[in-house]
Amino acid sequence: MAESLPSTEVPLIADLTPDVSDERLAGVRVGVVTFPGTLDDRDAARAVRIAGGTPVPLWYKDSDLQSVDAVIIPGGFSYGDYLRAGSIAAKAPMMREVHRAATADGTSGSAPLPVLGICNGFQILTEMHLLPGSMIKNDHLKFVCTDQRLRVENTETPWTAELDRGGEIVVPLKNQDGQYVADARTLRQLEEENRVVFRYVGGNPNGSRQDIAGVTNERGNVVGLMPHPEHAVEPGFGPSSSGTEEVAMRYGSDGLRLFTSLLRQIVAA
Image 1: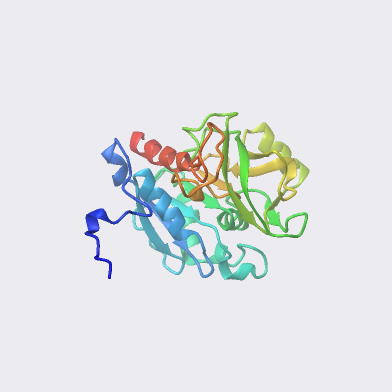
Image 2: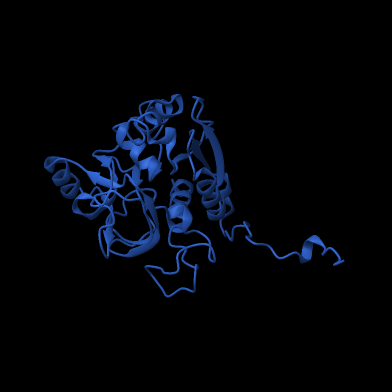
């Protein structure tokens, strides 16, 4: 019978110890909301931890934001996408608190809370009217799962401040209600006000208007995108390509920069 290896000799599948030079990042608390049907809350929390921050679980039925510095609404199929994707989750007590904090006007000394909605989280943000537009079934009426190339269009949000405008990133995409739609006036306003944050490159995977993959609100603190940056944060477990350099198989980690950007923006504020 093989002898057991000492714990120090057991190879780790994933080392979550962040390589962070600024220890202040650990003081940034990022809430991650979980609903019935959420799939990617642990992935989002993992991304925050790898970036150097402290993830804080937030339950949809609660109404205490626990003094977090930012919130992530992760992907999944909240309430099974019944009625419309995100429509029921948008009414949760926790989301009422997120809405209040995200729209704070500063008169009480509170700056508007940075919020990131990923996939189902993006759908929820549109249902809450924190972001314009809506999501409908993909134009080909099929679930899509692929590594997706995106162009960065806006670096004036806390989540994208350290990205390169006009540069590209590669992160996974997986959705069935990912077609972003809005009326002509809203689309024109988004373009004129530089509120398109990410745009699909190399083909539109779901029929989204004007290849839009992510948008922001007027103040720039709320961002929603359909692809999943939290699935491209650790070499060996991400895409096999990158928008910035050649990478080995599964070594793409372009998504990590959204989370490090958020943490550093909060520390610097």
